Length: 343
Image 1 (tube, rainbow, N blue to C red):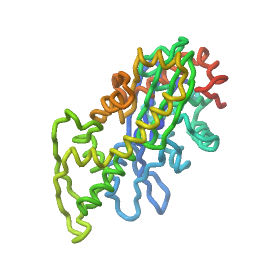
Image 2 (cartoon, rainbow, N blue to C red):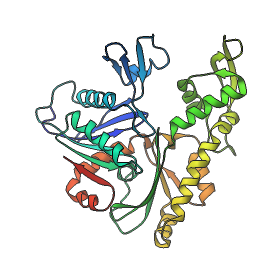
Image 3 (tube, one colour):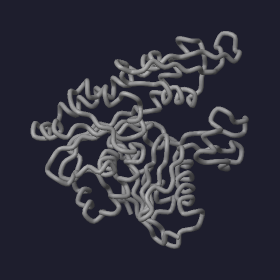
Image 4 (cartoon, rainbow, N blue to C red):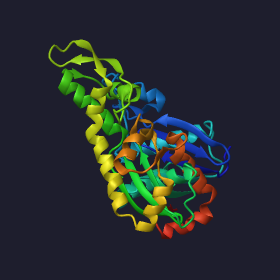
């Protein structure tokens, strides 16, 4: 039993990761909930619910309650959060309510912030802290951001891409784009529909992205993959072979927006911090950092060294844990920018 433990939650658009103080990351599951439409009862959460996406009968709907990094369905998010926190505890009830640290995108609005706060408190938190994703990502990637020296992080998640320059334990300047892995998937669905007259689901698009997708074509090995879907002309099932070049063409526009965001943050950075970034390079975190060649693309476009963090998918969750371990030290950041406490 956690008896008033500290818990960090990476409440992501695509995945939820739960970090428990002293145990590390104890849970990583998709942010999907299957609900009975008639009764409102939750049928499944996480991996089991994700397998139901696009495959449910009429009375059951599988939904993703977070979109573009923010809560789209408050009630379902609160239930999902409560379920994951309970599952992290092995299904037992808390003796004391836990202290929660939840990640939020750096560009979140006050209304969206309150929705996350209320969901955390309703899910059973004794007190809740919100930490901005770039700060959590930097801590999770092992960067020393406490010194008067600039570090740059690009966190490409499922719903948002958070870009930030950090120094002295806080965010100096940042930009949050409402684009991420989901937008890559949507772009692939649209491209296959337009070029092949074939309707495919988001899960198939994600498989295409992960298996043969690349952000940088030069030097990339030529690959192809067979995808199955519904022919838009005949209405019958059909299979087509899609090449790596076509997947790159599908996601290029979204990649250009991320590159543009990184350049914009660099343009707003002071000369002293810019000099530090030249020496240290840019660190990439988040599931989107696993896209083949995205580090090479950013390096070519910015002229800076770009590194993908070790285990980029779990950096934000690990960062919430490290923030909780040093909550007294980091509390001063609430007066800067990065951590906000809500009781």
